[in-house]
Amino acid sequence: MERNELYPVFLKLHNMQVLIVGGGNVGLEKLSFLLKSSPNANVEVVAPRFLPELVTLANKHNSVILTEKKFNRWMLRKRHMVIACTDDLKVNKRVYDLSRKRFLICNIADTPPLCDYYLGGIVTKGNVKIAISTNGKSPTTAKRLREFFEEIIPEDINKMVENLNEYRKTLKGDFEEKVQKMNEITATLKNKE
Image (tube, rainbow, N blue to C red):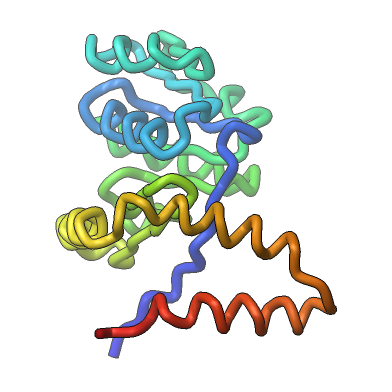
């Protein structure tokens, strides 16, 4: 049986430099996705031209820069991650190859073999964030699961998380004792009744 072996991480994109190559519909989708989850992400979008909707979105975020030029290898300097989503497979492949040479993680939209990571479905309720991956097999399934979790996770879950954080600060003892106490308190979260 095939298994998803991806390792999930939650990146602080406000501390990183992200490059998106492509200013069309997919570029708009990728930028929207990043900013929905990380509204202060440092992103530069490079393309010879941009959809008006992408320009409008970028103008709402001071941390987004639009560069109206064709992609050039020097644009990869001082980057942490790259997304290429042009309608030219040769350009996308070049971005991927150059990114790999620089040890940058790269995502080539709709081309799973040329992806070091996928942008999965994300559910956010305050401090609680759940990421969903289908291993690049079915973005629609990830979307439906996201919608499901958005409905079933209570709106007040953030209050519970904040209260538990405050309680955790008051606990005495070593690390293991604190973990045991927090496990006891949160055990009711997994009850199926």
